[in-house]
Image (cartoon, rainbow, N blue to C red):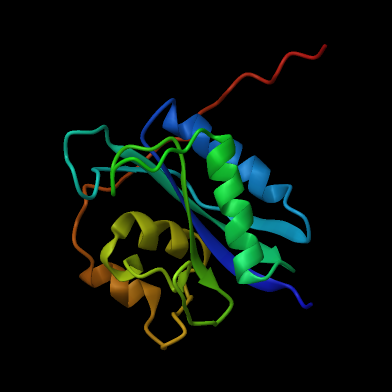
Length: 171
């Protein structure tokens, strides 16, 4: 199978969200038949849905993968589980949320997966990281991400400064 460009959105608002996202990026980079092409900066944004929860940290990665969309989805869900993801409340707080946003130029609609992500055009915390990765990217229907971003509702998106973490101690 030829490699396909896939874009994955990352989000967290629990248990050190920036560390959750950094850990997820490392796991995504280690997926079989997959190469990490680029990682966006992280952004803070207010939650979508219930407002009685902490702000989110969001970002995105660009992968080049030989995994099918459903194999990639299985891997994303396994990473979420490894990070303690519990699906208790729709749009509620979570340790890690990984969404397959784009998979090549494919449009997929199934019970398990919708690509492009159904709410992509309405979320600045998804569009901006995607634009950081590929400013010229368009959706399979031809709509440009940059045009969608200009029309997107404001969610108080704030670019975060990179966090400098000390290296892990050697044993």
